[in-house]
Amino acid sequence: MEDDDAAASGGNASPAADSDADAGGEGDADEHETPADVRKYARFKKVDGAQYDRVNDFLRDRTYVTAREWAIARLCADFRTETGVEMTKIGENLPELVPFMTDTYTPQAVNQARSSFEDKIRKSGATFLYGAMSGFFTAEELDELMYEVTEIAKFLLEVEGVDLSVEDELEAEERISSVMREVREASADLRAEELADESDPAAESGDAAAGGDAAGEGDDAGGDGGLAPSDLDPGDDS
Image (tube, rainbow, N blue to C red; front, side, top):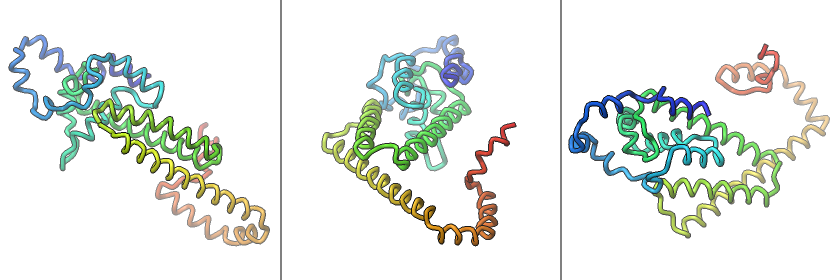
């Protein structure tokens, strides 16, 4: 919960909000200064009036991201131009853009929240795909899992204002299920081939003969950022 604590404590928030309030500016002036695309933005209107903690608890119960990471990642996708993401605009107008966000953010805080979101998506994706490829789930169990996570994803899209028809929902579910079945089948074939090679003495001797060249190539690949089992050597943690 450290991400939420940082946001709640104001560590990432800009002091601009407090200074503006103390200045006692009139509402008409504030409205005039708000960019037109910010005033028209309506992604999160379905949660207008919701408290941050309630939205955050919902997300943390079902995903690995926080409410601020979700909201800011969505804003970064929507306020992207040819030259990059408008992080200053997002941070300065965060309370106007997202009903459950009450503080303004610096561009650095916006970038940090987006990076945290991307990192969690990457790790979650690797975990899920490994589970699908590993054979831990039967085809039926994988279908049930896909249905559950798809329902959560669709709900979040609907909260963002995406209007999905029943036909679109069914088509999306079938396409996702079809892809995951193909992933599971291909992975099962790959594991079967690996087991067959391990039980074949001729294949083992051939692998040993090619070991010298392969080791050299592996070292070169590692220099490019590739992963190897040696990366998990517990001796590196000392």
